[in-house]
Every structure is written in structure tokens, then in C-alpha cells.
Length: 270
Image (cartoon, rainbow, N blue to C red; front, side, top):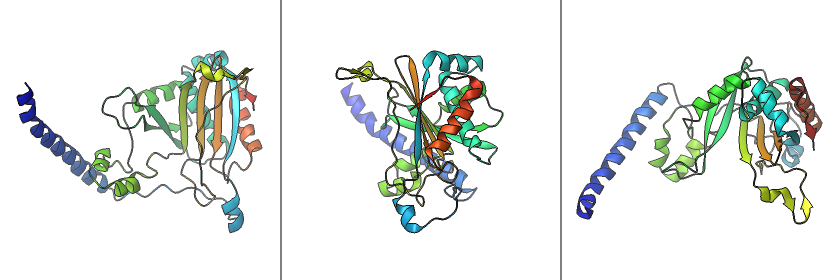
């Protein structure tokens, strides 16, 4: 059996290589028929002094807590889940900030730790949300979206990134996962975080950080949300990357209240 495996291995490698290149060539030609995709442009607010622009931190963030039972009751009442309610709220906050588009594109991280032959523990997918969407419709859109991945722009097949030099792959995929909003459901945090030494934690939040950003160097993403649960509480961390529309933490807190109040969610702000 070992000898058979030895003989067939090269054929398998060549077949895999041929399959990869076939996908790359067909997919790239198909994508380039529509032209080389540009990185989506951001809206820009009024220009400010260059010195201030470099020194100022363009992000604002707030933390909101909600009893898990109330959050899930609100989600169920609209035919959704805790996750689809979360996505719907982040989209509504962006529209409430004055975002003009009728459609919001959302990037959704996908946990790939249980998937075979995956190098990273995290992948990205996306959905498009319109103003008529509800947690119920977002739930269905998300279910379908989790079956696919995105890692390169303009519908170019991600297999291309495996057959070109690393520097090219980095340049091509840079910003590929950026959409109007990012909704990262971190999940349930371990019980070990419920206490810090002898002290009981009344709340734990988790979010990404954005080092090195200035008003002249911002991603496409306008609003990022991070949802996690610990014990009987959901914690929502919201980060604004749109200083032209959300200029202070107070503005962001107002958007949170305006969005959650109609759902009777008992939100507590940090």
C-alpha cells in the first residue's frame, strides 16, 4: 500500500496544481472583463489642519450591556437570533448617523477552526442589508453567506493568492474584507474572565484595536461592532471609524440609545 501511495502522490500533486491554475485563470479572466476593481472610496469630511490630523485619534468607541434574556427576547420577537439582531442594530446605527446609501454592505467574520485544510482560524464573508431588512431576513442572508468566503477584491478567486508571491498576494488582498460595517460576534467568553483575582467582574468587553489610523488613513469600514456574552449578559462594543459623521463618543452613545430604545432593550452604557 505504501508503494501505491508513493506512485500516486505526484499525480495527485499535479492534478491539484492543474485544478488551482484552472480556477485562477478562468476566475481572473471572468473578473477582469469588468475592469480592474478600485478600492471603494470613503466619504471625507471637512479638511483639518495637517498637524492635528496626524495627532488626533479618529476613532470613538462605547460599550453597552444588556441582559441576555432581554436581548434574545427582542431577537425572537422579530424572527431573528441574537446575532442577526446585533447585525441589524449596527446597520441601523450607521443609517442613523446620516449614511446616505440605501444598501449597507456588512463584513462578517467566520470561525474556521473546525474546518479542514484551513490555514487561518478566521475568514470573512459578507451580506448586503437594505432599509427594509429585519433580524429575520438578515438571519437568512447570514446563513447563506457563511457558506462562502471572501479574501480578494473584484470576485477574483482566492486561489490566486496561493500561486503568486507573498508581496503581491498582500497587495491584492489588502482591504478585501472591508465593507461599510463590520459585525464580529465573538461568542461566549470563558467563565475564568468573570473574576479578576478576588474581585468579581461586573462586565467584560472584547473588541479589535486599530493602531496607526489617522484621518487621512482610514479603512472603508465606518462602524465596527463586537458582540460577546459572559454569564447572563451581552456586551456590545461599538467603534466609529467615521469621524466626519460620528465626531464624539457622546454622538455614538446617542445613536445607540436611538437604535435600541424602540426595541425596549434595557441598555446600560459604560
